[in-house]
Image 1 (tube, rainbow, N blue to C red):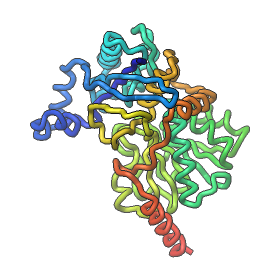
Image 2 (image 1 turned 180 degrees about the horizontal axis):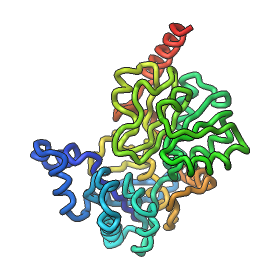
Image 3 (image 1 turned 90 degrees about the vertical axis):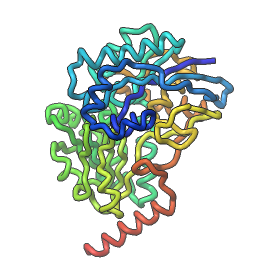
Image 4 (image 1 turned 60 degrees about the horizontal axis):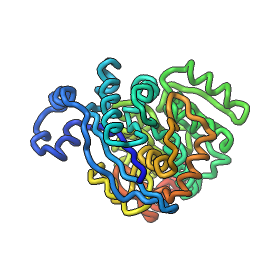
Length: 360
């Protein structure tokens, strides 16, 4: 039996705490964050029933790191990093051979390198498989919306981050025009210069103006609040939101029926998996970053597969092959925490076609 662990944290102090403590919904977010700061990392649940197509089996644990995204981004690293390391050491004590860093635990500090140096087990961020599934989902969604990627303009928001950087590198060989968006132009220009050998590339710090030109958007920032709003998006476009918390405002779902928003990195897990914890997904499915940790465990690859600020593009193909070998696959489309049916996607495409006719 292979063993793994995965570190999670609350996205919203009130919403997530109230799942276990109903009284938490009556307290303000700031007070709950103070309480979280005083808590220690702990085991949230035991994960059972992960079974590969090869017959290999794995069990694991969710370890909770009690900080919200806002705390990860605002508190000093000397406060945040020890909490992540404490969670990783719990995984080590439980007998896990690899631990995955979820959401903002993979962003803090040097993106997992210091955590890996503090424990005796392998550490991975799961970013490589997140990249693979985000791109797979984006390609499929674009096809359903009638978008030919070989003729499309694609924007990557958060292009200087580890996931955005790799997505941009891979897409530069598939699309004629890329728009790279991030807060700091220096890093953007460096990446753009590398990619111009393959395609036309432009850079922007202005999300709104950039997205108005894009047929397809992949967004993966470390922002605490939404950065993409209804007025920013081109009619008929596809937006793959890989970020947690989500980069796309829920207002888009209400105001833009002509835009297809999908969540990146939702994966079907092989076997009869029981997470014994509700993180808002249908039974048998998980985030791709969680799935990467399981895949490596089933493969017996107890190594630091995805660490640091730069992901190796070659490893995206490698983890995709390992995922297929063990029976992991894209779990359909979701939009704002709900499943998207083929009929709903067809309605979005029809709304986009009607909007284009009004313009012409």
